[in-house]
Length: 217
Image (cartoon, rainbow, N blue to C red; front, side):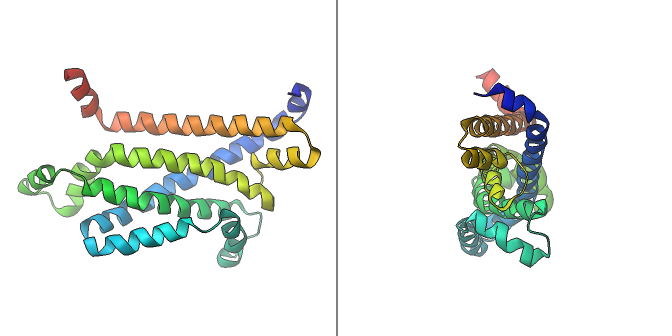
């Protein structure tokens, strides 16, 4: 490991790391926000489940590099505009999360749903205050997969010149020098671990009754 090279390029590496966090974090949050109503629709209306899940699955099969190249023409943005990466990864997050959200809401115990109906909860209120809280652990598990996937996919954008940690991989390959590659792997893994820890902590905070249940047991 060439520590001198890392020291000389520290400011650029920090800038790329912050860009990587932004480009992978924003699509994860936005994709989740879009997936919840789509998943709720697929869960509530069974006729909507097959087409929604099928379209989401097909969307995820599109190669990321193809989306990065095609989106500028669709959005009217520049090829190096970070918004292309954010939109592409948001689509991938939705593709991963729609089925997870739909299945999580469908798995809510019928007696819980019936109790909410008996208390006079209308569908929207029941979804927000009863069904979603019960489904949070499953949704959180799916979001952990989506977040880690986004951290990995962002690096592909280095092939079209978007600045982020993927630049370390291209530099290492061009220079036949392993230090940038190792640094990129370590930093990407660190971002993924941090995202995972944030999601796990959020799920725990949002489901305090699970901790109480385990304590009582």
